[in-house]
Image: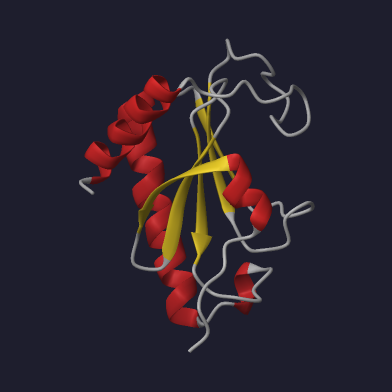
Length: 136
C-alpha cells in the first residue's frame, strides 16, 4: 500500500487538525476566515468521481459533519464549500465560513487578499475549537 502524501502547498499553507476516517482535516493559515480543508488520504486523485463509491460517500459524510460543526461553532451567514484545485491538483474540499461583514463578501475568497496568518495562540484556540466541536 502506498503511503499518503499531502501536497506540499497544502502542507505549507495549513495547520493539521486531525485525521478523520478518510480525510486529513486541515485549517488554512488565514485568520480572515475560518477556513478548513478536507483532503482524502488517497494518492493520485484529482476529482471526486475518481474516488471509489464508498470513499465518495465517506467524503460527503465528512463534509457534512464538518459543515455542521462550522455552523455551530461560527454561526456564519454562508458556508462556501468547493473543490477547486487549480493550483493544487490533489483532491481537497474547502469549507470557508463567510459573513456579510468579511473582507471579500460577496466575492470568493480565492486570490482577493493576501493571507493574514494566525498568531500562534490564536491558531491553537481555533484548532481546539473545531476539535472540540467535532469531538476529536
